[in-house]
Image 1 (spheres, rainbow, N blue to C red):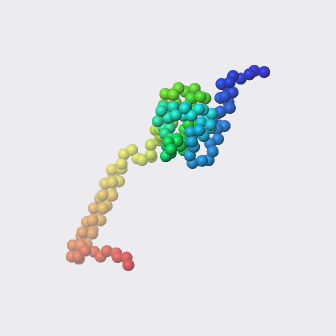
Image 2: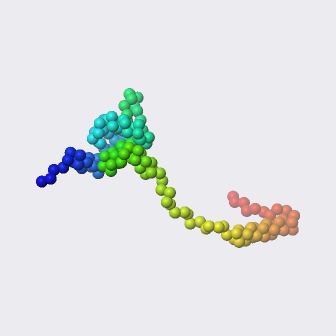
Image 3: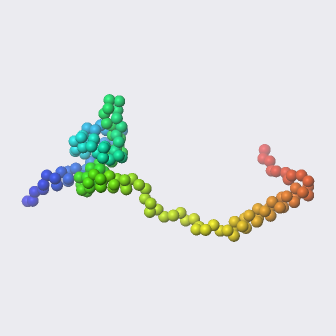
Length: 149
């Protein structure tokens, strides 16, 4: 029966799919290090290497991670330990993942405005203005407006 190396068994045991993040508002650094099965100094080091990872500090100076920061730490752990990225490579990957996709298709607007249609509308408005001006000249007064009570 083949035996697995310690690294292989550790990889299997701590995969991202098995990490369940409890439903809490804030996590202390000890809670996060326990979830990720990493020492707290690794998380403190990651804070210096990954600008996206910025936990707030309590009034006593304790690092308080929000859920999205814990999820980011899980993603960093996956990139470094399971996918084999270097720290600069993982940093770049996170930047790319954070950017919105630029491969969106353009909106279906007509490429050039319909100049004949605009000319027609303009001509109709001028004709209407001419008719209204003629009516004012005939009566000698402005036409009544529709008032709503």
